[in-house]
Length: 292
Image 1 (tube, rainbow, N blue to C red):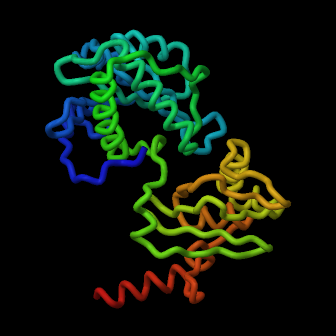
Image 2 (cartoon, helix red, strand yellow):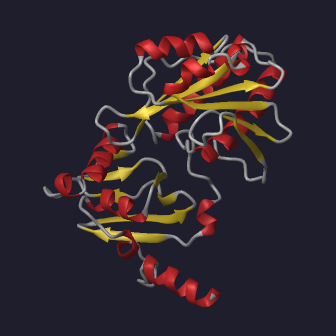
């Protein structure tokens, strides 16, 4: 599911005066209310009325290898006992994000649907690995309730990127229109992609080299690990001696995208070029000279 493109406003209340502490986030004219806090504050925030309500929550923290984040999606009726259980049983998480409805309008079936939908979206996007051991099915809901939850979910997905969570985002279908298609070539492979608001999108069907250079693991360890992860989760699939992207995939930068494609360290501002051979760097410099 892509983010909604309609402009909206969020109200962020820093409840304890610490910008990194407890925050209550609400979207104007929407029922979703979000509670965001670091794990260390759970004993202090457990009395919050939001945590006494039925809702869905996210736990986020570093992966065991230290490269990137790990995510757990859960639901609670209410949320607090589940968080207290995770406090003693899950070590990885460092922050929690809980979603409830203003007025406590969510019930158990509602949050089971939201949990299942969020897990499915994260698995499809393949941007952040899940700590969930089970992948629940969707509960039976009336047509009206299901429609209401899809609206609630859309509001959640609009709020999460503002909170720094991009795990559920597929590549927006309109993104390609905002930036020219560029190509990256080398070692017999050809990839195409474009800049996007979050970094750089490589298009499905693009090629990547079958083997990375030996120095990649040492010189750009994080990019090497990401490439291996994309191979493991099927974003890169081996075919005819080359890897191919099975889906559009959003990278944090053009350089990361180029490194995964070429299997080596790479300056994406130079490696990605338009049909006339102009580099991304040259194109952006030209744009700046026109507007200034």
